[in-house]
Length: 454
Image (cartoon, rainbow, N blue to C red):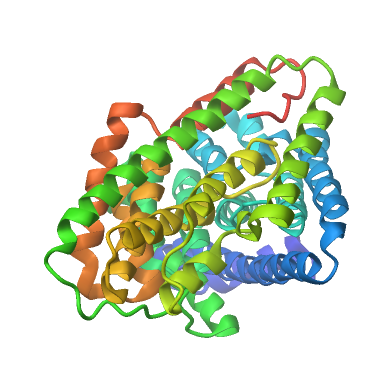
């Protein structure tokens, strides 16, 4: 059955419904339902491939150590080249592109929005991200999944026939991005708060039902395939002492500060790379980043590689609570090297793993008990992610849902708010704010396909 014939069948079916209001509401809901299901399936598929390739990288390092010096440069180059050559707007995280598309949401900017959210960008985004994680890049899956879901929802909106009740494209894209985050981490509340805090500047009541529906269906799709999993699990935080408040404040301030400075370093790298006039300069830079990553992973600390989920699981659920000081540095260097290549790379997971390593190290400095150490690790995750994104409530809710530790929600919120306050002294805008502005600038002034550096 062709798309045109399917549209005709649907039209005849709905013409038989006599209640106009009911018919209108059903027609308004169907695109969100179907797009959510498709986005959830794609998110699960990408997550499974991402996890498999991340495990493959560590297997290579464990059993064929020296091969990492070939694997990482090759994968980094392929990941970067795909974006540079075929999809400049698939670069780095997908969140700035989604935010730019939401801001440009008028008919006048249809061509520009298509450059941000198209099937071609979807393919480049997915393949580039998978090569980056196979090469050991300190990247996350959530940024690509968010842009992927935004693309799916936009395409369903584009495919609606002329007789269909009009649906706001902005609301579709926003709901898609929120559904993507929910499916990526199994965090439905996080997806909703993310949409409110990060993506939209419109009044929430205008599209709350559609947003809730999209998040629920995408989340249930992910759960139906992967099961009702927690991204991290159930860390023990049952014996928290009141004395932890002082250490919590220190961790929140440090992580907020370092998350902000990591963002500034990434932005400065992007600005510096704009001076590159020849392709070989980009190639040299990407290979250099890959070799640094491989060298640190092979000779010093393999924890620099990958999304950092292993660090979070080890520190939260084993007796090995306290990481070395250099692990915290490497978990910040890793995202800088990986994100700075300009390939497809999410930064949520690397940020929370960097925060976890800082919380773990500080717990060792303060000689905290296992429960207190777990709380500092969770607060470090919230603080660092807030320093990067400036979304304290999203950060707190994400970590809460990843661990199901409702008893510490107030500690997590305190960490997020303190990190936000400290971050404002470094820069009033988040990494995503700057990248969104750069994306809009590229779209407005491009006379030729923009370079892949930002």
